[in-house]
Structure formats: structure tokens, C-alpha cells
Length: 334
Image (cartoon, rainbow, N blue to C red; front, side, top):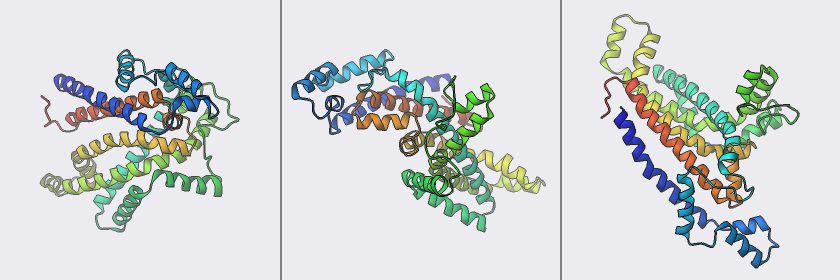
């Protein structure tokens, strides 16, 4: 296991290097000039050139990338062109919001997706099965930005049940400790803060979880149908086991390998989908920050956060591979 883990970590290094090169080059292809964004449209050519020299943008691309890679090797993601603050420092203040939203969305997707897939497979051909399949198809087909706007229009504008933006009400007093509002509410014993945070979290988490939920449900159903046809399932039923024990103890566990793989892949989708979701719901996380950085041609922010997200995605996939051995003792790593 240790040798397998070490090999996978070594294999991830070229992947991260490739991601850094691609993002570095693509950002330079985006129309616009960071110096002009900072100085404004009334800036003269001399001022723009001095700003470009100060930011190192007039240097050849390979020298700019080498400087970026050198800082990265020392754990420095650079400084934001717009604010001048270290990227890591700003990211540390925004990541808790994105993690809170992503974990909530993934929890909703896994609970409803796996549960719906199991019920759909168990009641194959029934009205419940057809309804679950239609829901999955609709969930996969709906773009996040459209669904987010519909949720805002329905629950925030028409029904006025839930807020449509931010993490907390403007009048809520909150002294952050960890940056995770729900965790801080539990540590401080503030039920009012938890309720307010949950009300703000519902709509963006639902919007972000819909596509992963549908994909997980379809994969769970497909995998469960294959397992339920196996001989050992018929043997378990012949022994007189109750149906829920057959479904949960025997069928679901053996059907979980492809489902775990899909869940691991959905982490990457949640991180990328957070850009649209956080922008629509004015959620103060990494996704909205990256969107603003792209508009402002803030190269260090986009490069740094893209690498962090790529690292998280690689780490989650490594964790999924390790979980295979725990779910199926027959799997051995070399």
C-alpha cells in the first residue's frame, strides 16, 4: 500500500506541472491587460508600460513561467495583482466558505443519490423507478446557472422563504474563529447563527448538488441492478434474510465500488461548479473570487487557485483508490 501511494504521488507531479503550464499560457491568451485594469482606461501608454515592467509582464513568457514555478516550489503562490496581498492569505479566508458549500452539496447528492438509486433498483419497473429515472435525466440536463436563477425566483422572490445571496444576513453579528460558520455556531453555542447560516446555505447547496445527485443515482441504480442478479443474492434470500438486509448488507456493499469512483469524480465537478453557483448566489468563496480574478486579469490568483483545486482533485482520487481495498478485500496493491 505504501509503495502504491508513493507511486501515485510521484505520478501526480507531472499532472500538476502540466496544469500549471496550460493555465499559465491560457491566461495570457485572454484579451485585456492587467496594467490597464489597474490604472483605468484613462491611463497613458507610458504609465501602462511602467506598470507592466513593475509586474514583470513585459518579460518573455518562459521567464515569467520560471519565476512563477520558482515561487511555487517554495510554497508561494504569488501576490494578487489587484490587492497586493498574498494569494495564500486571501485564499485561507475564502476556502472555508467554498468547503462548507461543497461538503453540504456533496452530502445532499450522496444521501439522495444513493438512496434514490437503491430504491429505484429495488423497485425496478415501478412508478418510483420511472420517476427516479426522469428526475435523474432532468437533473443532469439542467445547467447550474439556470437552476440557480429558478431557485432564486421561486424561493426567494415569489415565496420569500429563503435568502438569495451571501452567507449571513447583513444584521447578523459574527466573530469568526475557524471560518466555517456552522462550526463556529456550534462552538459558540449560537443556535440563531446556525439557523441563519443554514437558510443561506440551502439554495446554493441544492443548485450545486443537482447534477452530482443525478449522476450518483443513475450509477447506483445500474450497479445495484447488476449485483441483484448475482447468485449470492439469491442464496441470501433463500436463507431467509430479510429483504432490507439483503439490499444493504450484501447488494449495496458490493455495488459500491463504481459509486465511490463517481463520488470521487464529482468532487472536481463541485469545485468547478462552485464558480457559477457562488457568482449567482454572491457566495464569498473561492469560485466567486476566481471569477472576479479572471475579469480583472489577476493572473497569480487564477494560477494559484487552479493548482490548489487540481491538487485537491488528485488527492481525492488517491483517497478513492485507497478506499477500494477497504470496500473489497480482494483488491491488492503492488
